Length: 153
Image 1 (cartoon, helix red, strand yellow):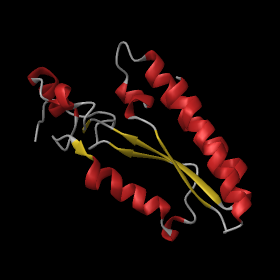
Image 2 (cartoon, rainbow, N blue to C red):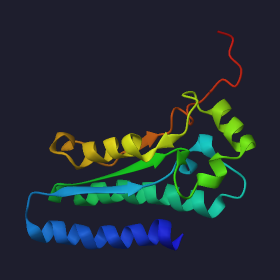
Image 3 (tube, rainbow, N blue to C red):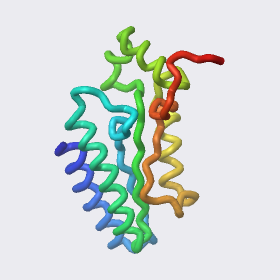
Image 4 (spheres, helix red, strand yellow):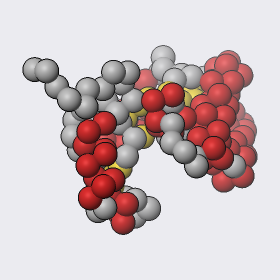
């Protein structure tokens, strides 16, 4: 909870003060949430993690409300299952691999580049000047309601 919520909030608070004081016309804050904060990605044993990430999504929205006057945009990215150093051993387990492939319509794991980096590039670019207070879900469709485990097509 301290890292996922408090740490992100303290860093954002410091950075936003610097953005405001620089008088450069705003900026962009991007919080990294998780699909675990969404109703379709609830897992047993994830109480602290999921709670901290959904709280971070709310912090994102409140910060967007409060900092909009300073032209500071605040958004969040909620990734699904990604191949990374943290998940390396997990994604290699056949049982986990099969479960993800049944639940994720795109039938693959995400990778940080380009899946996450492309969203980050968009959010820091001037083309997103009217985008604030949103949670961008990058999960291969895994949090869609009604994901078919068996297809009739």
